[in-house]
Length: 112
Length: 115
Image (tube, rainbow over all chains, first blue to last red; front, side):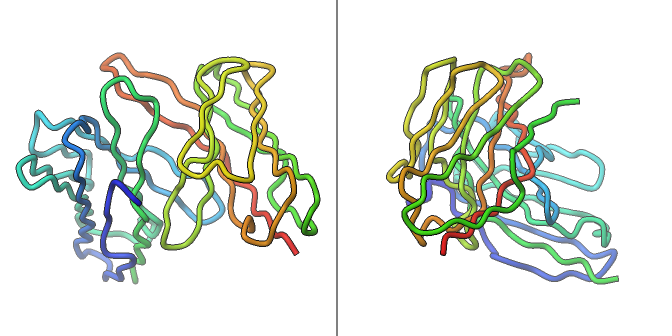
């Protein structure tokens, strides 16, 4: 079963709105939480990542919020633009493990 | 700029055929991965390799094998293709950053249809 649960499966937001994607995990050994962005016809690419020693990380219009006690983290896309329309995957890994456990993905559509 | 290339963007094969998917990376990365991507299931790891001739099973290795004879090349083999292997296949390579975080770089994917 998936070690990282992601919701919603899809969302539609108006241009300028806020997109919010949530992820939850059970394995407390996870210590690295990246988000990947995938455009149609392309492979996923690293967007932003966080470690559990901080509660928030911001890069431009993208922000990760992390709640260690709840074992949840989320991606916020502020001022959403049509160019942000893509599938977003959360992921988690632990220690020196090379492997990432991915969520099921969220397809974001930003309407102009 | 990291580049991961996959030999085919689209493939159509018949049930029972042996299928080879090739992946090449140009950044001298130690680690390489094969995933399949299905709607609602995300990315599921099939196999990965952390060195030449080394491989480890991922979450869904059944029906697949891999080969890594050279550092830059990682091949996925479907020994006898079945219709339930119709999927998007993604290859990735990875490197560890100065802070210890692992970044995976993905190829564009191969969409395989098994008839």
